Image (cartoon, rainbow, N blue to C red; front, side, top):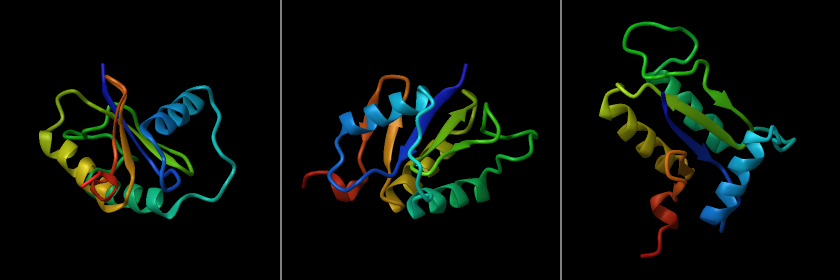
Length: 118
């Protein structure tokens, strides 16, 4: 069983419920018809530079290859035995790219630090 996260590029002011709605749409096969969001592209390039998703091999943190990437999100299915550093890198890169992080295990949504009330 994998540990599943996804990162989302939604409009400014998006709420955790907006993310959950988008996740439900993805699971139902609905994806927006638009150009890929540059934040998603940047995140995908950065995470796969450290953890490639096109070739299997020892040490890969991914339970499902390749990563599911859409115009507004990237889904990350992690091997439960992956190093904690992978999770830290995902969190850091999500914040750097102003993406909201969805934890599929409990439905939690974590906004980028800039969006958290001060």
